[in-house]
Length: 434
Image 1 (cartoon, rainbow, N blue to C red):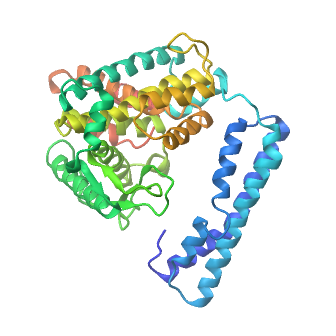
Image 2 (image 1 turned 90 degrees about the horizontal axis):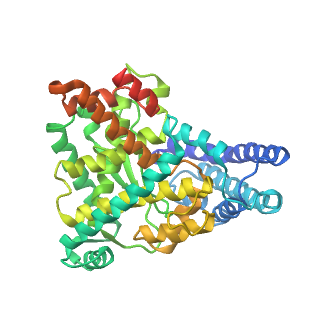
Image 3 (image 1 turned 120 degrees about the horizontal axis):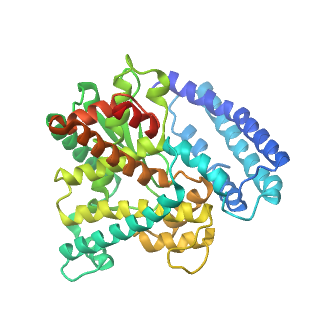
């Protein structure tokens, strides 16, 4: 939101003051769920209660937001009041979760096949064979591991993946110090990608060539993208929420992330939908289908590798690190929620199994692993939609090229595919192939 003007701060104050009403409606929905026996896993209730309590009191996001304002006293009073009532609303949420919902919540993390099939279809925009996809995920994960090991040997001859990563982490030439250096590097990298690809592989309209790289005002972790305003007065933005205490960043890990969030990833995808507002209605511009959107971003990462932007073995290892994580998510998410046999044959998946499995396949600290796995367990079908979406994008591209024969031009495929906005992947396939 705009915080550069008095009008902007007035909107902030009103939105904070309206938050208690929204929270009250949410709590009513949860009460209805309890009465109907439609409740989440107790693990999710406890995690969300912990997160909610972080927004209570003088250290909350709302309090720090109000404290940033440089406005007349009367408006400052409105902001402080808005911060107070918003913070109190989160306190009521935490209390409700712990006192009222937790006693009714189920112990099992698994949602079951029926629920999962519906969730998966919603996230992907197409019905997939869950059992075949689980087996494909196991094979894809093995392929990612093998490719990583091959690249690790190129980074440091004779090294395994862990040794290669340690070698790169110790390389000062691949390290950024402080968020200012991180933001500047993100911006330079993004600007170069826009300039290069706009000349060669994509048609990038002039208003879209401005992409702002930002450090987020929160410290929860994660990197995300927000689209431009419809008039492009507010540019598309790539945000990095840097966890508290983190001051060093490795470029070899994150180069592929800039391509994922920016160009040719989410910015190209979402920016073109906004730019084509004369042809696309609001739903097709603003709707977010995870398989389409995140699948495209992973497709974009691989595309940049194919185009030579990740030829440095270190940068390619970073890309594969992310791709391996996404493949692991397919296996553990379907495995846990459908209670499938574990790949090693040692029994049936449980939620607790997912933490060790994820830690085995990502080079991240324990807090990141726990945050990520808790999200998967509470958002059935969402995490696999990234890698499944990438698979379906690549299958669609290959089938489109085969249908076009000698006329095939990937630039034209990308133009056609992105011109229809955000739709389910089943609908996209019908649109492009008939």
